[in-house]
Amino acid sequence: MNSPTPPSRPTAVAAVAESFGRDVDANIARIGELVAQARARGVRLLALPEAALGGYLSVLGAGRDGAHDERPDSIPPVMDVDGPELRRVAEIAREMTVVVGLCEGDAGKRYNSAAVVSGDGVHGVYRKIHQPLGENLYYAPGDTLQALDTPAGRLGVLICYDKAFPEAARALAVDGAETIACISAWPASRTATAGDLDEDRWKKRFDIFDAARALENQVVWLASNQSGTFGKLRFVASAKVVGPGGDTLAGTGTAAGMAVADLDVAAALETARRSMFHLRDRRPDLYPREVVECSYA
Image (cartoon, rainbow, N blue to C red):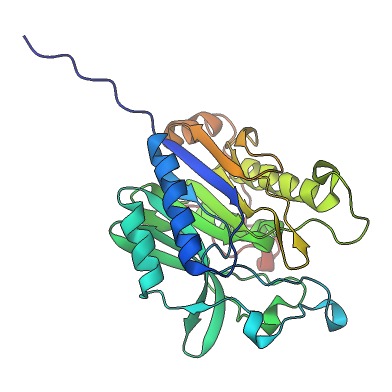
């Protein structure tokens, strides 16, 4: 008699809210702890925050003309995609796909980047395109929006302020992204500051963008974020997993933590797109040319 087939282990996706600073070794050790926690919960795709390997810029909007106000010795450490830091993350990730932020150096330029890594190595790197409040003084902008094939499926990656631009997420969705990970170092407002982070206006915008980008593209959306404080910045945390209907499936609130959701991504997308399929029902022939960069096949 054949033995019964054991039940399959649920798969999960997760996004992290955590504090990461300049100590790269400490950051990698913390990443190891977070990956171990995620692995114990069956996670196959994990989004870590923007600048998790070395920390973000420490001041936002304080310099001349609203720019960052940084000393040269206070910027994040520059890393190579083929360098030891991402090799260590790959060793930690093993079977898991991990999205992690870093300051990438290439041909004498710095980029605010997100690497997609598993035990097989680096599957791709996204360089942040949209740059707020003088970030362009320290980073060159990226120029590519393209989904990646990963062990966790077809994945799109964005960074922080990118989520404010519907065109960026839409470009990834029409390129076949089933899941989009938007990793952030999203701070609370520094004007009209709310004592309660839940009432902060920038926190509310963060949440609105997450729900809107997931719903309009009918994708699974992972939003990671820095938490705590760094320099003069206070981050809103608020990591979450948003389903293709715009509903939050798991979230950390304004505290550090890991938002984990068990779901079959393909099945979730099929259900959401069964009747009204937003990508199929677009009318790119009628949209202004600057809005239409690609068409859904």
